[in-house]
Length: 238
Image 1 (spheres, rainbow, N blue to C red):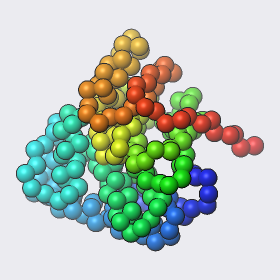
Image 2: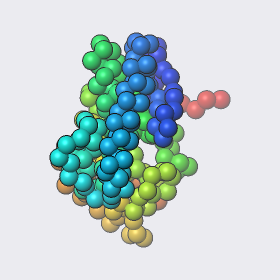
Image 3: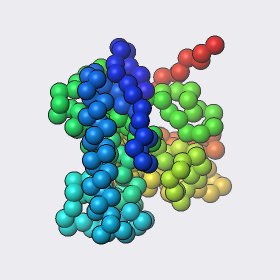
Image 4: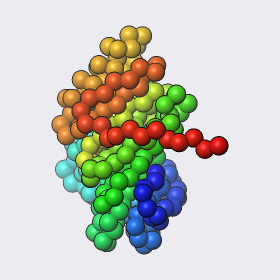
């Protein structure tokens, strides 16, 4: 991640959460770290009594629970996937919300590839999906906020996927929904008929309420739907 002016940036790991934070205040880093740690603990405590919440591939109805659980359940229901599909994005959203509440004007959190951002300046976020030809070659220039970006991959991600896409990147107002939606999209992108597979992914994205756009890469074929941030070529360093 980068921006047009100098900001504070730091990466850290909290258990499975591998995060990079960008903000205009140094205190924002600590706020994000504390937020992710606190909400992770809430989720872990809930899962002790409700283990299916983290293992189900289908939505789970939640009557009562901490905020992170309610958000994960809501986004999973919208995308028709298991709640775990939204966890990284929801943690990023919650951290950004906490940073904004403490008067940060630039608050960007990347959690395992899922990005939540609020900013008063443009922010560039790199497209990264393993060793595909476009990976680390283009970035998205973000100018409209809030925005959530998530990428699911059937080839390069550590997360489970039923699909085979190199990358299914979704764009929403929240990273939590983008996270769940990218999983749903990637799940249906498979098979030897590449254009049909991409069209299935696009149809899935269209069917999910509040998905603003999607970019799908499958065997070097690309399909898009909706509003996609501007793509900027990354300058090579020599």
